[in-house]
Image (tube, rainbow, N blue to C red; front, side, top):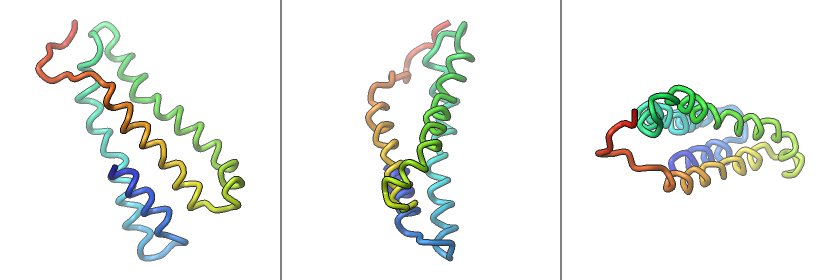
Length: 116
């Protein structure tokens, strides 16, 4: 929820570079990148030792593939929103809603032994 709120604040609260731009850019970047500290703790517990490194690498980097697709579609979205970069960026924040839903399907790893 923090990612959605900070990204919407960044895109909807700034019409250009000004005094509000840098703090909102920092806030959006800090909140949306915070999950990278969580991955090294959670991902190893999901996979057996034999495939752990490969599975972690795939899981960790799959989001980059999705981000590349989103980045390549930015021009199409800008034309859809009649040149509004703010609306384009705000619409891309919908991806965080998918994350909120998908996380409920993740395995609970607390109090479980690692699979060898």
